[in-house]
Image 1 (tube, rainbow, N blue to C red):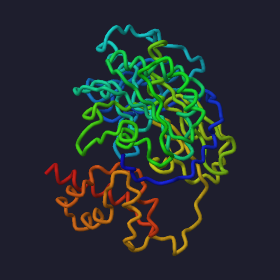
Image 2: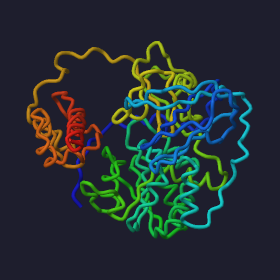
Image 3: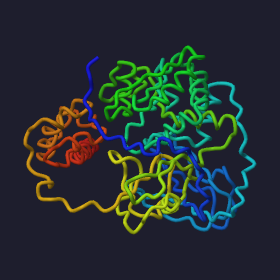
Image 4: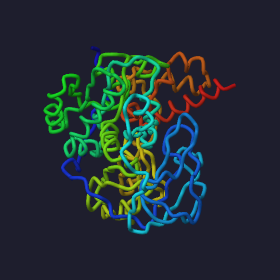
Length: 433
């Protein structure tokens, strides 16, 4: 197999030995009605309503969506408009907690006897991809193509993040059981779990657990970012190439995050929908207590950072997710949502020296070598500057997954990945005309 491009990063897995801990119940939660790719949900509650843990508070009949449940018991104090990080708006439900955490009577293990019942249960659970993509799980698990392999993304290749790792070492039986449930109800004969080599304990534990199941294997991945990207993971574990315009199912694979399959195991046993998730809290020395915290969905970021003893006076860079593909947090009042696997805080970066400012491309080719999909960022940049969408299509710009390898590798400090995203928007806009 040809070795794919990528970059070597410092891992900064400072919290790998930090056992998960439960965050204290927040005074209030703010739960957006859009925590997934696709159509936003409509609130099923109104101001003044009393809600319980696990109660469905948002849903829609749209195909590409997932229902939303309350993570707390308490009183709905407001329903307002909320601006998402992508600039779009949706409704947000604010709930004042009562401290009792009364569980909704509807929360009970689902009855699942066949594929249709399994997919219905997964939808009702509200599960979306926990690796950051937030794709509704019931949609992903119902491809029209025939699938022969379930591919589990346990790479966790972004620096700092260790929430998936803690899932694997603390409750590996949930991972294996979730895998077996997906394989059973979707009639998938094989599963491969891809884990980066910098996680030897997780590899050892899951390899041992998988011995009793002939269809499950653990594959050790190289520590080259971005191993967790779907196309990269499928190539490095199965040797298959997902072509432009294809989905993983077109190559006979379904990719799921390791924490997602573990959640399926828990849901089928308890019936408790997706109302919380483990979040790595880390950064530089502004974080006093690095941790992996189990956080109720909708908890304000400031509450999570307070738990981690963050010096908010010095913390001027906040991120959802990792430093390579994470999203900037504009307001510490913003909530933790289903797809958030980390919150990182950094002190203000020093002013860039003149030598660090972006300069002209020197045609060194480092961005080309770094790209895991063998794209040509310099050519894409020139085509974008000329607004040449024909050339952008020929250069396969729509394959770009915004992993950031090109920007990281560029000695001229040019915003290469950013330019690629602008180019993709240009191509999509042209296609809509």
